[in-house]
Image 1: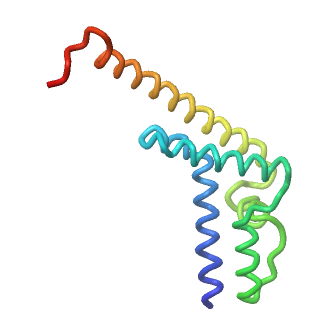
Image 2: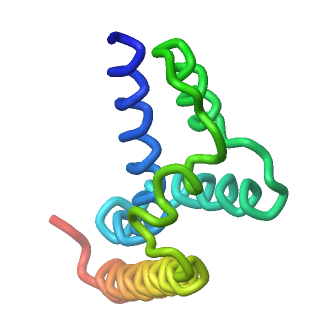
Length: 132
């Protein structure tokens, strides 16, 4: 039973990772340092999809599932996402929607960053009154 619980925990972490890939850019609006972690997660995801290497979380899930007496087959997305979270035949539409959310999040991040720098320059630029 312990391996099954650990398998479910890793499964939850995997879903959180997928959510972070899609929505992590929006977290960077509030916490700008998250952007580097998000870019690394995006790079890993893009590599996994394009080069087809295994995600370490999938390997851990498979090992735990085997220890719990299961018989894992296929990748995480094929097992838990396609047909459950994403209806069959809508993979491309969901991928494009996720891509659009990522692009919008980074456009917003860059706009907020530029606006923040302008206001900071206006406040602390030449001719600004010194802070007391």
